[in-house]
Image (cartoon, rainbow, N blue to C red; front, top):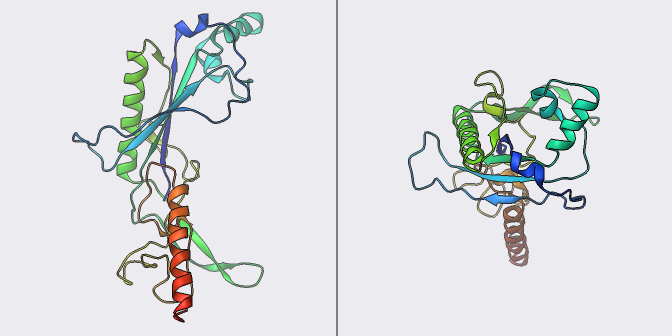
Length: 243
């Protein structure tokens, strides 16, 4: 499973008048809006947060793609327009929770093997209807925020096809978890509450594979906490001679 991602962009004319600043070195820092619609009825399960930011960092490849799409011109007129709008765009990115679906799973590949002749894993992935609804809600929310702040919503997304409402390619958010879920029933889970496999007692899986769903938050700290818990359990079980 992966985090649901979608992105919206707003253009704010009032930011054109801000004196130029060098924002190089800021890194990946951004403002953050936590999930806030938990107290109302939504047409999808779980939720998402929003990350947003802008600024005048060093231009990169594709920096002025939106300007070139919206503005007809070339040469000096286009360069003037790029300078005018530089730093006047704010980007909003949604990160939502994906829930399991029957189209996303892994299996032993019946044909492919690695360099040692061992069959490799074959992964299947597909966004579900719930994730599409989350992405749609993200875009509606992005538009509302941008327009309420006096900006123009410039994002153009398809409402159908493989990636509707700007939903990202699976794996792009790099918050992949799952495939060896934690649970109490060996028939429906691979690991117990200490990341120990039900079938092989001296085998522990201490990464994101134990997650039964994918939160909208980054999973790293939870992975570390689960690994710490599993490590203490391993030490205790080894002391008792159970491993």
